[in-house]
Every structure is written in structure tokens, then in C-alpha cells.
Length: 191
Image (cartoon, rainbow, N blue to C red; front, top):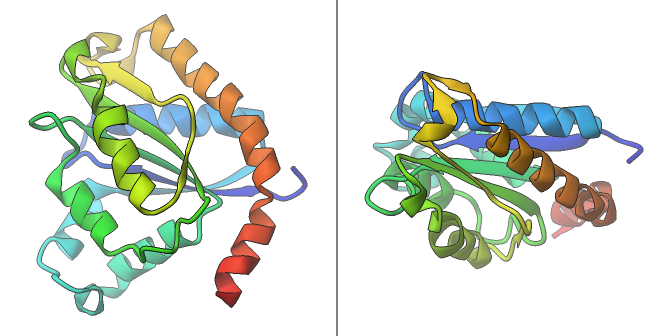
């Protein structure tokens, strides 16, 4: 790709430190080694207080509005949430409630999640994919799920998890090259 890909990554964890954040940072680093990117990281633990009390977008602070605008202008989104009661966090969903319903049409989205055990791995296909299908986004074929056993503290220790991250990025690259983000961004501006 001739221009840097504008990548916006959302870590849906409500706390810091966070295994979800560690996974997002690993995805960004792996992608950055594979292709030139401009990365912007949104941490729900930071922006949460700015969006939690808002019911409408015009009630958002300038900081929260800037993060929503970043999501809407991304060439690629990386989104990850910890699993709470078999789904993404409520505040994660609330963040995306503010995103315009047409802003993510055809935007590639790499899905990721973390959970206490492997039994939550289907959250990517049963919860996250339907959410971004509503936006008519292009969810990438391989999502990345990480269980607590893949970490020691807040560091990735699993070679298998690193392999899944690499595979997800490798499989995403041809789709990102074909997406021609500069054309998509221009189309969104004129719509």
C-alpha cells in the first residue's frame, strides 16, 4: 500500500492493566510490522466516563466526540472486548451506539476478545460479528480470542496466541490492500 493505513483500535476493557489491551497492542504491533500504519488507540477505561452519562451524541464531550470521529474515519478498525456474561461489555456497545449507522460501510474490522476460559471463544462470531454486520462493515475472516491461560499476568505467554495473531494479520493484509482505503474515505466524505 502506498499510504499509511489509518488504524483505530478499541480496547473494550473497563480497567487498566488489561489483557484485552495487551491483545490489542499485540495486534497493532504485528500489523505495524507487516504494513505501514497510523495507529490510534481508544481505551474504554479512559473514554468510558465521557460517554457513560450521554444518551445522545450531542451530549458527548469534545474528547468523546473526537474518538467517535476517529472510529468513523478509520481505514481499519481493530475492536476487542473482554467477555462479560457471554457478551461484550455494555459500555463497549454504548460507544458504538454513538457511531453513525452508515459510517462503517465496507470498513474492514478485525475482531478480538478475551475471556476467562475457552468456552467464551464464540463471542466473536455470536456477538461481535452481528454487531458490526448491522453497520455493514466487512468483518475480517479470522478473529482472535485469548483466554486467561494465554497470559502470565498481563503479558502474552502463549505461542499459540501469537500464531493466531500473526495468522489473522496475514489473512487480513490482502483484503486491506484490495479495500483502497483512500477511495473509501473520499466516498464517505461526499456521502
